[in-house]
Structure formats: C-alpha cells, structure tokens
Length: 118
Ligand SMILES: [Zn+2]
Ligand SMILES: [Zn+2]
Image (cartoon, rainbow, N blue to C red):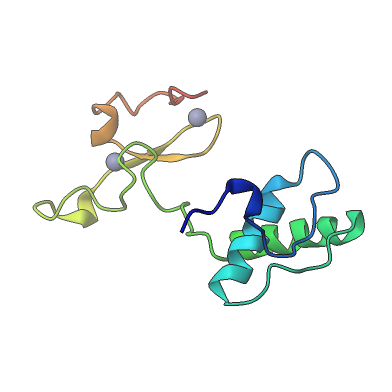
C-alpha cells in the first residue's frame, strides 16, 4: 500500500509556543511515549517554565556525585594493583578540583598547584 506523505497524520500534541523550549517538548514527548500515553500536556508559557524547572530538578537529583573523582582520569582509585591508601591527591588552588598526583605526572607538591583549566 502506498501512502503519500501528505496523507500521513500525526498524533494530537501541543505546539511549542516559543523558539527556545524545544528541549522541554522533546523530553515531555519522549516521556509520554515511553509511558504509553498520548503526547498531551499543558504547554502554555507558564506551563513550559514549570516543566523546565521540574526537568532540571529531576536531572540534578539523578546526577552522580563527581566531587570525589580525579578530574583527569575520572576514577577514585588509580588501579587495582596499587595500595589506594597511599594515593596522593592534590587540589587546584584556584578551582579546588582534585587530581591524582600520578595523573598530573607527579609535579612538585611543595609549591602551589594550578590545574591546566585555570
Ligand atoms: Zn587520576
Ligand atoms: Zn583549577
């Protein structure tokens, strides 16, 4: 059966009211489809602001805590063969991010340290 593209229809769905909330709409469409529901939700300007806020909170609450990882290798430990109690960590004096001393190439730790990003 040939179906002309002009004969295709789409599910009823709210229309994006502005030029900067496509992310909110995409996430809500996906959420509704994954839940087996019609892609219908309140989508006025105030509704979109509330959805944006709700999505932000959900993403932040689901994020991993990255404060205890090395900012070069992305791990807490160096590798299994080393005694992780003796790993030396140093922090950037500017941004306060932490790094394995070894991942930085073992720089002199007697002076201040500033990471490459700072
Ligand atoms: Zn590291
Ligand atoms: Zn830094």
